[in-house]
Image (cartoon, rainbow, N blue to C red; front, side, top):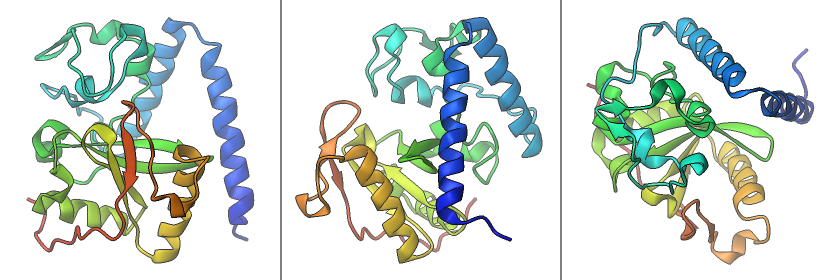
Amino acid sequence: MDENPDSLGIRKEAEASNRQELEAKMSEAEFAAYQDRAHAEVKAQNGVADRVCGECTACCTILAVKELHKASFQPCPHECAGCAIYDSRPRSCRSWSCGWLLGRVPGDERRRPDKIGLIFNRETLAGKSYTVAIEVWPGASRESTNAYLLKKMSQDTPIIIREYQFRKYDVLTRTSQQRQRVLQSIQAEWHPKQSRSDSGAGQSMNGSALVFQDNQDRSSTEPLP
């Protein structure tokens, strides 16, 4: 028998909470080993065990790194042709899970974040885990091949698109019912004090207004290269 969706959500929320408590108790060395092992297992399962970041440094700019007092969408002082402190990078960086690196994004090296302008990860909102696509440069999600990629991925799992500098977001899903459920999760997490009639404005990671872009045309029939 399939698990009730509400029960499944509660169980996953409890699992996530327990994992966070466990991680908080780890030393930096323990956390590094734990994350490296977890990432290696996912890469192996997805058939990309040998995949590496290479010269891609998209996450180095996108991420806010509290240990380095670095805001999101700001250059990192350790960024070079890669990361100068990769083996000893802060926990905020090590916690990041790049969807392309882990094989969760269809495609090969041509789908690398620095080449398409989109970086994917999993984000928990209101106890539910979602795939989030973040623009590395303005308008990347609307480029034809990327629009096709996002549409294709949304047939299997909801995709939340966070536009450049997190000022706007959009949601792609297979059905309108799915979309409404995702919007409810976003509302609970990003706009807890506002109703949907308040235009969806909230607070982004860099302090600017966060606005929901409803019914944006992201359709594309251009195949993936």
